[in-house]
Image 1 (cartoon, rainbow, N blue to C red):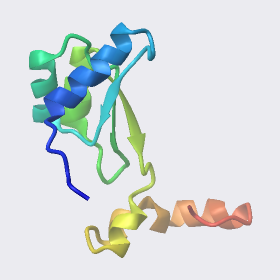
Image 2: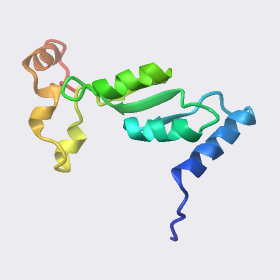
Image 3: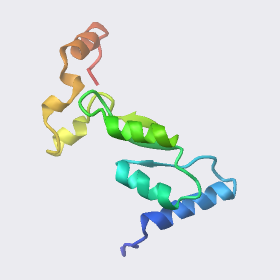
Amino acid sequence: MEEDNVSFRETWQAMEELVAEGLVRNIGVCNMGCSGVRDILSYCKVKPSVLQVEMHPYNTQEKLLRYCRSQGIAVTGFSNLGAGSYVEIGMAEQTESCLNEQIVTDIAAKHGKTAA
């Protein structure tokens, strides 16, 4: 299968067309830092309504959160207790997850559930 080389800008503009056509109300981005968001804001006609990023007590993304707030972009977090899947592929340490915190394991045990 041949891979198309489409720039992010082209992709964003195509999503903006969906807004213009009334097919979607809001568009957003995922896994971007401040520089990526700034880049989009430099050319977009429709500002991202939301940025979704990994965010938990061991990865608070404070600078990014402040920047998005200043630009009126909502931020939603994923892997709110830590990214266990990154441990499996060697991109994070087991200690980088709130799932190992005593309070989390205690609450899970109390309710007969796993920490996840």
